[in-house]
Length: 310
Image 1: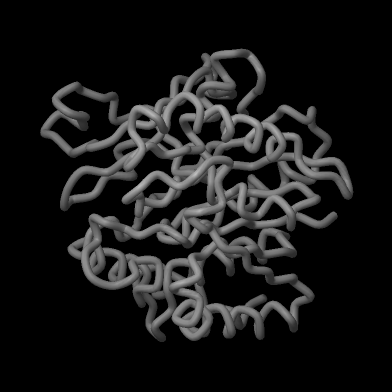
Image 2: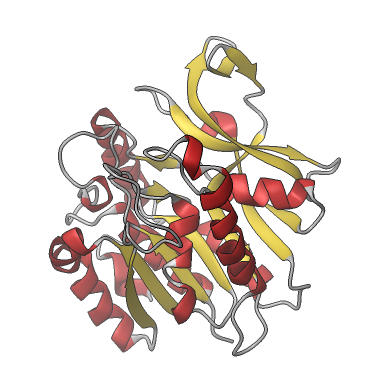
């Protein structure tokens, strides 16, 4: 079965500062975080990769990773495709002075014409660990209702930055941790002596959070049900949310999926993972990421020549 990994790599990364954070080298041979996600996805069984990028980073992206990954994937019979997240690709006129991208929901919609199989979505600048990709692939190849969704569940305390606030989809889960009841996009989550808080409100550091690692089923050869719903509700987003906040309103996956959950339109399966997340929200995060990658290689989790074991 064809299974696709959709990598959202079009973000601006305003908290990161200068440079393109999703292209920052972190490996022994200048690999970037995406390299490790692609390696883990292919090893888990994914056989199609789609990059969502911006037109202005296309040249740098292909030079930094795209051309190299295409060469690796060609030998492994893994497809590689690109699509662009373009600010003007919206169901309404572009608000004056709008420069901020429309968010992760819009990024996924950019790939709608390319996806006719089960697919997973990840952020380009997050390291998820091997277990999540294996669990997600194994879930995707099973038969599910059209409105079923899977989420790789991470523990909040394992996803925080030492250098400032982060945004996470904070989840309420059913007893037994099998399914998500609700998910709320929560910004400015910081570490505290007692765990974590957001804008002064305490959060349970053991709670599940979404790191935008979602899985969506599809019937062979057909557009996934979720893509059609995401597109329809994007029109509603422009009717209901954009008029009151035309410069900053975002169409976000956790917010959209949370709304569908509250309306009883979807089910969301939690795929538990104990892997520790790391990423580069801030420039100051990079040394810790470089050290974490080095230790994973020293411990035998990855070959020094990353793709050599595929």
